[in-house]
Amino acid sequence: MKKWALIVFAALAGCSSTEQSTQLYLLPQAETVQNEVAQPSKPLLVVRNIDIADYLNESSLVYRTSDTQVVKAKYNRWAESLSEQLNQRIVNDLRHKQTKYWPVKMSSVVKQTEQAKLQLNLQRFNGSYTGNAELSGVWSMIDGQGQVVYSQPFNLTVPLQEEGYASLVEALSQGVDQLTTKIADTL
Image 1 (spheres, rainbow, N blue to C red):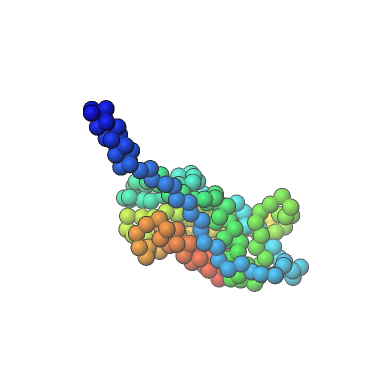
Image 2: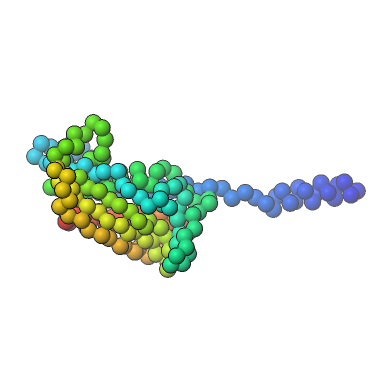
């Protein structure tokens, strides 16, 4: 009888300790420009690889719990490199929001000498105990000779519409949209 009680207890204990599944997130992409190709009349704007603070450069979503402490989510992660997602999103957004340049991702097939470049340094890209998504850093425009012609810090907060990581990702996406609008207006 004790043997059966032990088996039943073990079975119930196994049922009560369900394992939490990992949720994967992607930043929503803005509308892409369909059927448009670079034209010789538009100079290229090479969007360089994004420099992300070390604590953000992992697969975990990050949440700030106080002015000095951050927590990396254990079960809520980026499905793809954050740097790569942001790079592609910025290229797509700037193609849609301005007409002076044709933005392209930095790659070995693009001749980068004498091309304007956009550099983004990201210090914050996280949720916060204040109920907001936070984005901060500096973006810089570099001319074809390697001179910084414009540099602008940014510090954006976007309120979360509801609790949860899905809402955080949406708010971060809205912050990226605000940032690319500011960049496009400056170009």
